[in-house]
Image: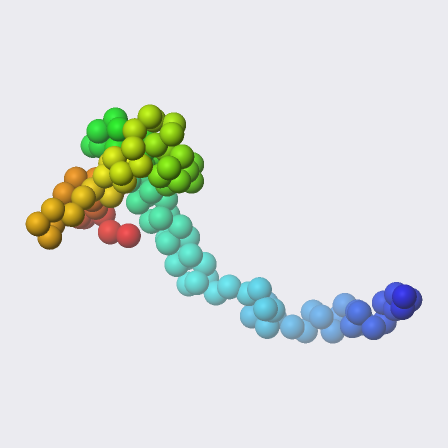
Length: 124
């Protein structure tokens, strides 16, 4: 096993030499504009998420809400949800995603959430 050699792993440099570099030269530097955009994006993401949670709580049926919660927030499979709730896997899928009838998507919590978001001007 080779012996540890700090001279190999470290670049020796006098502190006064490091002081000659400005922050913009550092690889972790973030411009004030990039930081502002990152904060705005995080704030928008948080606002959208809280709006969607409110829609789930207020607009979905209790069964849709329970299936959406278990599927998206607790990462349960549709089969696991059907076992928990005592309903078929197909019915779980219908509560979450709806069904296709005459070429149209009918029902489902995700469809309802999308429609309400569009109506309220919430885009993600």
